[in-house]
Image (cartoon, rainbow, N blue to C red; front, side, top):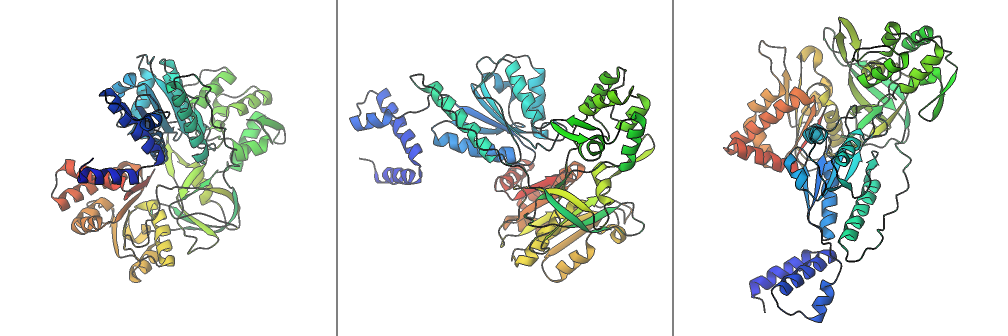
Length: 571
C-alpha cells in the first residue's frame, strides 16, 4: 500500500488527467515494472498493450509576428501530449541552429510578412536554412504556413523553409499546409495527418495512414461595402503632419476593439491615363490575369500594383522588354518611359508579371457599442522624398482623398492578440501618433459598457497645439473619470525632445504599482524605435520598482507576456 501522502498525490494526479493521459501513464508504469523484472497482472498487461507512440521527442518551432503562430504551436503541443507524444514548443528566435541536425521530428509553424518575408524573430533560422549545406538525412519534418491570400506572396516564408529543408535532405512527414487568415480547421487537419503518420511509423505492423479529410474551404473574408461619412484632418493649422479621421458607415458590421480594417487602395486615374497613352493599349480590351478576366482599365485601376514595383517585378520587366535594367524599385509609369515596350501586345506581357495590390491594415479607432453601424480609422498621410521628388504612400494617399459619400470596400482583420481584458481589470495604454487609434476604441468601449477597471493613457506627438489627436474626447474621458490618468509627451514643445518613454519613467513608482496589481499593458505604433524604447523603459521601471537586476526584470517582463498582460500592435 502507498503511504497516505503518496496516495493523496496520486489521487490528485488521476483526477486532473484525461483518459488519454491515464492510458499513457498506465503503459509507462507497466514498462517500468517489466524492466525491473517484476510480474504484472493480466489486466495491467492489457492496458499496457494499448497503442503508444514509440517515437522520440517532437519539436514544434514557431515564427510569429502577431502571435498566431505561437498560439497554434502551443495548442498543437497540447494535443500531441494528450496523444502520448513528447512535444516541446520553441520560438525560432530562441532555437539553437546547431540542434537542427540532431532533430528527428521537427514541425514548424511560420507566418509570412510584407513581401514574402519571414517574421523578424524567424529571420535567423530562415537565413540559416538557406545558407547552410549541412545535410539532414534523419530529419522528418512538416511545415504549417500561415498567411493571407490577399497578398501577392501568400505563405512565401513557409514555402521557402519547406523547400530548404527538402534541399538539405529532410523527409516530409506530410506536405506543407498553407493557410489563409481563417486557419483553425486547416491547421487541425494538418496536425491530425502528422499524428496519424507518427502513429503509423511507430506501429509494429504497417497499416495505411488515415489522413484527415481536408475541411470544406471557407468562403473567405467578408467584404463590406461602406460609405464615407466623414474625412477630416485632425492636425491644426501649422502642423507638419496630416492625420485623417475617417468614419465609414456599413451594414451588418461586426468587429471588436483591437481589430483592424483592411482595404485595397485604387490606383490614380491620372497615372492610368498616362500608362494607356504611352503603351497605346485600349482600356476596354479584355485580358486574363491570374485566372480572372477584366478590362485593361479595370485591371490597372482596381487590381494590379503599379507603384514602387519590387525588384523581382522589375527583373521580369527587363526580361520582357529585353533590356538591362539595374536592380531598383520604381513606378511602372517611369519604367515605361525609360524602357518603353515595343507595342500594346508587349504591354500585355507586362500586365501578366504585375502583382495584385496588397491590402493595407489600419487599427480601428471606434467601438460598435459607442458608434453603432460605423467603423472609424486614423490615417497618417505618408509623405517622403526620393531623388528630391515628393511622394506619398499609396494607401494613405488614396484614403485621405476620399470625399464624403464615396463608396469603399473593406474587410475586418481580426487581432485576437490585442483585445481588452475583463471589465474589472486595469489597462495601461501607450500609443504615440496614430498608435492612439485602438486606444480610442478601447476607451469608447469601456465608457459605453460601464467597465469598472482603471484606464491610463500615454500619448505623444510633436506639438500640443497642433498635434494632440482626439484632444477633446480625451479631455472629456479624463473629466468624467473614464480615463483615470493621462500623460502627454509633445516632443517639439521644449528644447530637449520628450517622448512617451520619458513620461513613463517620470511615473515609474505608480506604473509599477499598477503592474503589480494586475494591470494590462498595451503598446501601439511604430515598431522602431518607439516600441523598442518603450520596452527598455518598461524593464527599467520593473527594475526600479522591484529593486531587481536587469536579468530579474527581464524574467518579470517575460511572465507578463506569458500571462497575456503585455501586448503589442506595432508596425
